[in-house]
Image (cartoon, rainbow, N blue to C red; front, side, top):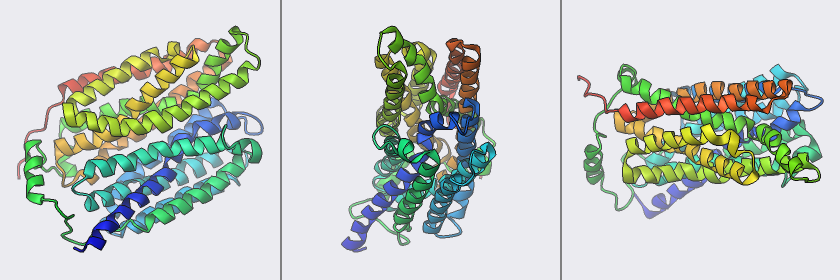
Length: 434
């Protein structure tokens, strides 16, 4: 293997970041919800969260298909197809008018399927080029997904003012073109390395010994994994972690505006509504760009020091506490920011800890296919969390009782507490018979 070939692998990192930046658009959804609940759309909060939930669920379940497709067709084609579908979904949303079901189809199903197809490609290709730096590569890739939301939030919202200038439908159209182009460029480098590729200085034998110490030599097929109680324990833990984070992603702007408007009005501030909107949008940016992105890297590093199980317990009990307290934390801007960062950091940790835990429990050989099954829990969390938040948001508005918002946060806290108990009880599965 020549030095030129070795250097080429860094283009894979660039391609992975470009692809994941575009796919992170799904986490920018909350920036659109205010416009979609106003005229001429007049969607309810629940309807905006149904669109978001359908996108999340489609993303999760299509990812299982994408993992299998990569073994049959070149990964570059899989990611390119995903990028084109993502872009097409947003472009078509420009032409469905104020139809709720039109947005479910275009932004939920078409765009969500595009994200599901493309998401796994940079990770699967990247770890083949970087067997010596798997943690770094995976962290960079999934952090790009988290940080990407910051860009799309700021361009559409306060910084770029695209929604105010162009209208939400035209922003969908512009974003669709940008997403397709970014993924198409990134896909250029989504090529597997030659058979037998080893980076200079990397010792496969030493790596195998290290894997044996943490149980990485035990290999389960997906069928075998699905017959273990550990899979279902891990699956429910991910449902709880995903539900809490995705619920907040979906409603943080709507909830923040309603909660903080009272604070600014009581403080005698002029234009309390506008100040609440700015504060809520800033919290979204912190939640997505800083805390969510850093949590993906930070929890991975933490788990290298204290272990995967201890990290899962710590992350889930921490999320339990902040979800239970968030309704009251949101009474003031400072505590609202703190709570949003806390939730975001823990939510990002899901995407560092659960794939690693899947490999620890069921082996490294089939981790791509196995994690696809584990990741279906994200789709369930994406249905339950946002719709739960949207429903009680509508109830709070209809009843005039802001306290209705408390219910979904307490439900999420309860789910995270149950997940914590499962994490404490989690043990490696017994060796399967050959």
